[in-house]
Figure (cartoon, helix red, strand yellow):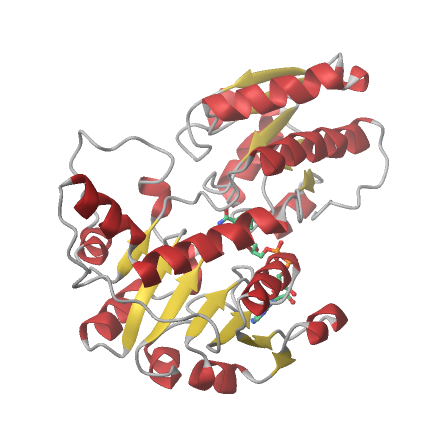
Length: 332
Ligand code: NAI
């Protein structure tokens, strides 16, 4: 079976090639690694393949899915947890198999969330540069104790729960909001309404999926409900935040700090080296001017353990498809 692997990076190839070597059942599989992102302009590259393997910024809208089906592609393998980039109704109508990799390493994203909070709070990124330049002044590096602070976890699924447990270890009081509460969360925190969470939390951390119901969950109205000066962290999906409203809240100082690993328009920027190029995204550039904003380029998942798991589960999903078995990770 031939699979077109879109948005391929060198590390994808390393981890997938290793997983293929470990798994005898995959001997007939041929992965072709393609650097371009899958979209209307690049979908023709899928001609002649039976399946495509895609990542977070590949765009599988109705037109792209129809073109894939016309070329004879029958399976879409998402090597990520989120599936907001796939038009599932169209996929179902076309009879395409679509599967994802849920919960490959909740700790990878949870630990990155804490890395962002700790960096932004204790300014280690600024301290690193200062010390290298021989500047040992502390002014401007003042942080706060996490111990005793209130943290609000929006979405208490696998990543939200892992993040809540780490915050609890720091001695934080943990509040959670989720329309589908999980029993396990009650050992770590207390479920409250979203309004109460926003009003009481010193740090609000987003861990729910992007859907029509959660798009711009954080907007002018909800930002105004937050505790003045609170920190907002988003390691989930960029579309959860109305970025322009967040910029206004930073300017008015209603929002005290922002840490994001995801950005609404990230597909134009992330996973590429743009260091010798002009960046045209004025909104993104405005964000980078705030000293209390920290941005990483969607690297929450990026640990050895997570990449191994992603490769193994993606190949297991593919085997389900090839053998015509039901797939517990199927989303269409
Ligand atoms: P999950 O499915 O285990 O948990 C998501 C939780 O969000 C569920 O409990 C669900 O009930 C809840 N939820 C749904 N609608 C909600 C709403 N309106 N308000 C509050 N909660 C709501 O998913 P998991 O594995 O915890 O992943 C969460 C998200 O993290 C993914 O959807 C993905 O977008 C993102 N992610 C980011 C990565 C990164 O590298 N930065 C890597 C992996 C996932």
